[in-house]
Length: 113
Image 1 (cartoon, rainbow, N blue to C red):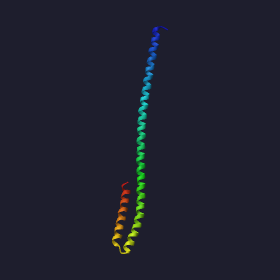
Image 2 (cartoon, one colour; image 1 turned 135 degrees about the horizontal axis):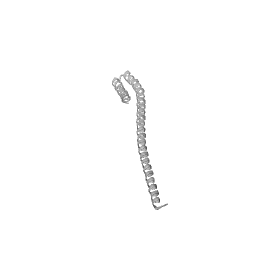
Image 3 (cartoon, helix red, strand yellow; image 1 turned 30 degrees about the horizontal axis):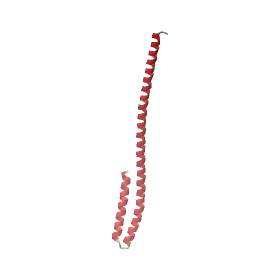
Image 4 (tube, helix red, strand yellow; image 1 turned 60 degrees about the horizontal axis):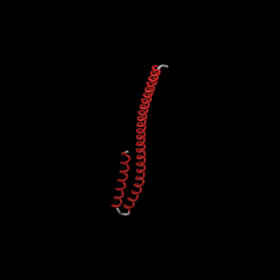
């Protein structure tokens, strides 16, 4: 081989290496961008699922609280009627008022969700 042909072969090889390196860099850049958007998409999806779960749990808690307030208000109404039957009208009315407010607050909590 002559010096010119060796130089030409080395130049061609260097050009090929440069082209391949450029393609590798482009591919890596595209992969990194893709991974970034995929990760961002996964994070957004996870956040949406977490918010939906939190809302579901809050609703379940509110409904459970409403059920407890219904039971407690029934008990309070029985106590109020007993107080009134024993002549303590004011105490009976106060107990009923408190029980009704607690029940209304629990219903409002469920309605807000």
